[in-house]
Amino acid sequence: MRSILFRIAALSLPLAVSCPAIAAVEKSAGASLQASIAAFEKGTGGKVGFSARHLESGDEVSYNGDEYFPMASTMKVAVATLVMNRVDRGEVELTQMITVEPKFLEQSGPVAESVMHPGISLSVANLLELMLTKSNNTATDMMVRLAGGPAAVTAWLRDNGIKGQNVDHDTHGLLLKFYDLPADKPFLTSFMAKAAQDPKIFDTIYQDKPAFDADVQDSSTPKAMNLLLTKLFSGKLISPASTLFLRGVMERCTTGPERLKGMLPVGTTVAHKTGTLGGSANDVGLITLPGERGHVIISVYVKGATQPSAARDKAIAESSRAAYDYFLYR
Image (cartoon, rainbow, N blue to C red; front, top):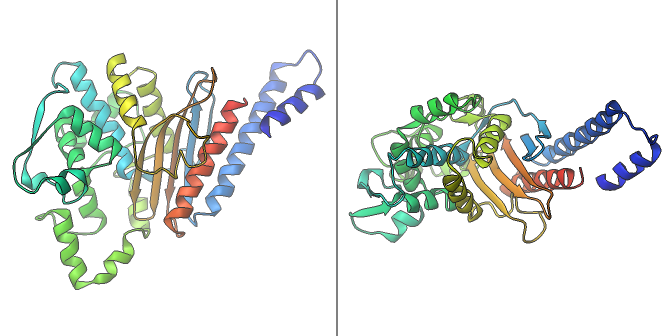
């Protein structure tokens, strides 16, 4: 549709089209994309934050792009990039084995489910793989430690000119905070103990918490995440080999199949990372356009959602497809 509109607009303009006229058409198209995102937002019962940039040209469109949204597991992009930065500096090796102490073992996901006894060691490469493709929290918290802790990740973001994104907890700490649980026991142990006293806690797993949404800790603006992704995939943060490694891992992401990838043409390559917590559902990454049309950096966040998870996923998928079409026919 947008392609047809551009052809009609082109036919109606004089042969010697001025730059201001072209800029006006582009601005109108960007406004149309923003209007589409606003319409998709209504289906969530909450708020959508959206930022999309054509990697090669720098053309960008945002909606609520400067507002903070809970990152949930999309914070793992920054963690992974800093770990790879340490690899580039020779401080860490991808083959380096990391011992997972029992106290750091999250009681869910492929690590805990597969290993019944103490004595777990995994390479940095495999921990990154589990963190980004399965969103495994054990792997994530080991990588946060290897990166130097949450404060070190935020400081590194600032050093690279990325404001508007804050990493304040590892995933264990974030879950304890969200569910208001004591810090002296593993998350799942504390959660199940609380559930035994109050089974209604299960009803809050996907419910919004306004106070949590309003907290800038562990949050990002869509524009800030897009800037991180842009710098990452344009090779400005880590070496070409490390960039290729992370991109390959993120292309193997198995979570959120109905989000960024949900309405894209079959076979579209997407390197992405999802995040889910309470009333928030997120997906961020890199979409490869067909032919020589380049790539789209995209960050879509949902917070305060009152509609079910499927509606949140749908809004992300619709936003992704709208951005895909916008940049494909630009």
